[in-house]
Image: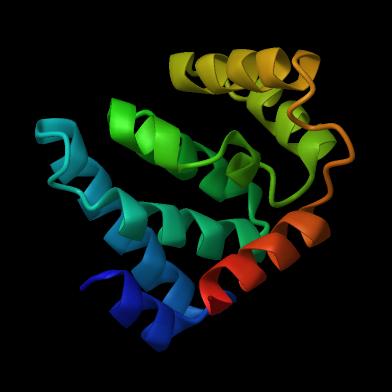
Length: 137
């Protein structure tokens, strides 16, 4: 599946079983990207992250973080804001409550990005609207 097929099949706001399929697709592509940069299709990975961001489920934060961390290309393609579909404060609280090295790494990156101004005037709704325009082009 490529980016166009995923967008056609799931749209930007998948729900129910479609969300589970997007999660599975992202996990599989993340594994491929970790094995060899470029094999995971970072544009498709980014779309999956946008779809999960739009669902706003905290349990997807680490899945999105793993995708972002899969390679240098994925790190550049997948915006840090995509971890925050439930909002910045809720995401930071969620990551703080997890006792995993990857949760701590994601939290520290969020805090650095927040301090650098990357979340100034951030809202999940505005970010979602921006991606709707991006994918409509």
